[in-house]
Length: 219
Image 1 (tube, rainbow, N blue to C red):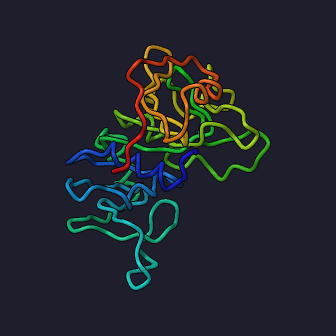
Image 2: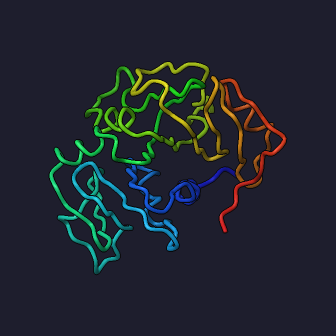
């Protein structure tokens, strides 16, 4: 079966490394804060001005003034810092974030991302996405492999307005984990119970399948 949002977030958390400064985008990426391994120290950055974001609060921990970029209440870990959004974006634009995890509408085989606008629909704004894709050296996208109509979101070329060009390194979907390099999606892992053939059928961009594809592990 395809992964749930929480399972995608759990797989994202496996990409976090000790000492990393990480920005988690709104939606599925933010959920990864709940699954960071206790064996590593990671500082999660929110573009509204929090470095050291912790997991979602329990009922007795809720502080309405402690929020992430998606206006959700969060906690702060020991050693966290709170500062202005201007300083936060200076950190992003200066290349001081090691890893960014974003959602997207589309990603293509050249690492282009469309994540902020569907023509004809109301757009509240791009948020920090353009700065994040331009400033981070490593960017991972999380999303469903196909839209609600079954159309692939992993394409030969994005059809929606681009947020960033040639910037996405990895995609984690509800079906698979894929690297993007040399103008193609490279299949690394499949979700439990998902076949390589299903991933192939739902990937419209160029897909390369190696002999070492493995099933995702959540232990």
